[in-house]
Length: 311
Image (cartoon, rainbow, N blue to C red; front, side):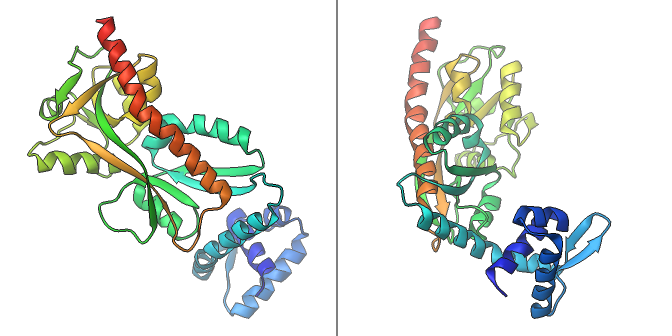
């Protein structure tokens, strides 16, 4: 078994077709098929079944892919760093983010990062915290930006952001004061994520400790859908400021400070303890942190001042 055979195996696993896998690896189909046959002979087990749709991995094939995925990821990172000799960042970066961070911040970060580091390729995905942590553990992601879990993780964790939730309302919502007690906000017509969502878990853990029950009229896990509902109707929502910064800035939404108790979340970057971030990945995380920190703390104050002046 050698590295080239493993790369052929990965190409066929991910492409599902000998033709596409051969094109991806820039070899003729018989050469790829021969190397995979040698690999199966050495392992002593079949890695793929042929069907009408192409090549489907066997259970052994799925297991092999899972075992070697972090190995190939480590190889790619090491190769990129060794080949980087001119000081300009290069290579491939794969980052996962929770949707509430990606919602209103990611496009700005991507615009600057791709312009500053044109030789770096990026793969970004959003998802729930448990799924993203699993992807980091298995080597699918270089790092993940997540809500800080309540249980200890077997991953390195670096704090990125501490921010408050705010009560968000739209132009059609009845007028509210700039500051509200959480108990009063809980009695409004709320749209919140479901109990499967990380943000809801944070909200419930804080409010239940204070004897407050959140009973939203609508539950939906899409942050984008919640924001649109609030903007277009009379729903209110409890969301992190960072998820609605642009709509607060242009006046399409209003933010109301929540007190008694304050609702706060911690956002962290998790990485594998045995796989340090490449310079390119570290630069992306640093840029994301730079965009998040000042805006989350400074923009809302300016908006609150404008809101008072307009009344």
